[in-house]
Image 1 (cartoon, helix red, strand yellow):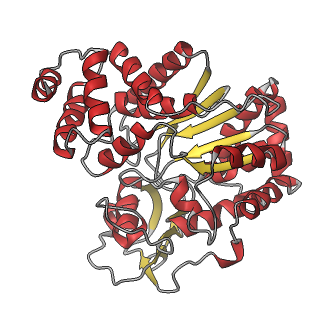
Image 2 (cartoon, one colour; image 1 turned 90 degrees about the vertical axis):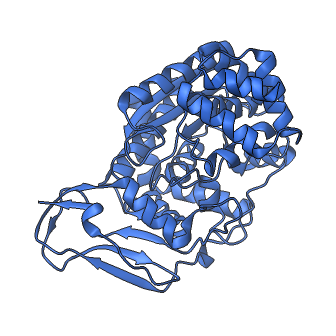
Length: 408
């Protein structure tokens, strides 16, 4: 039956709920091998799935574990998710902003996929920060300070955890059905009332085209309707890295700069304001115009950063001990001109090669390494100017800067 199911999807045919349930739960229970699940995932990547298959797979994911219900936490609980991008540290910025405005934030985040970093990886670069909270801890923390950011609890959608890890190392990340089922199963199971999803496209995202992003948006909205959840999506460009830093500790430090109001002139800040505005609009049921005023005020008055400090302290982290490698390499321009483009994918690959993410499941992440962009799109450059600074633990060779920066 295992080979029949793989072959059926290889031929582009629709799988029944029973077939999907048999295969995915078989893998979860250790009855189906990695190489067999990898074959099915690849067939899904190549041939896609029907809406009914996606609805079935989402239900299988949800039913693999517990469904949380934080009914006794007052207020509309709004969750946010990003499909992943190079330099995407928006959760670290948005969640404290929204919580500082009285909207409860229960955020269950993931680790990196492919070249894209994960929120949990970034938080683990803060010494002591506990990313694994139990249900009761989450509930108590949200009642006390209005916010909790945690990895998936052990019993929440365990199916997604094992599939997520396998997709990361088998080139099966960029699949709309698998992305939709993964995201929506976690959002529904974690008890969100309303959901905003940042769907990214471009060479630094899981999806390459705007059309794919729209397709993913539509199916996630449909899944939300099936489960009675309001889902809004925001489609954003990921051909250029978000902000100036790529790498876990570096990105935490950059998020702090935004929350302190010291960085308000790049694509990271703009996207955070837009996403936070959507969340506040949904959570308070007010206009986007009024919500945006509240969001900006939260940063300008220091409420957002104070909430971030509160979050880190409550989860036992110490911001004073964040470590960024003291060994750096300066990458300079070999010509003068204006920066026309920064290739997000190539920056992501470079950061990964330094050790900021995993190439194999068994790899260990070095939280202190990464890339800082010293020039952004639109900046003027002279020959010899520093384009980027690499924070490294090992020597790096053969960096073709022309693959990353387009300068004319």
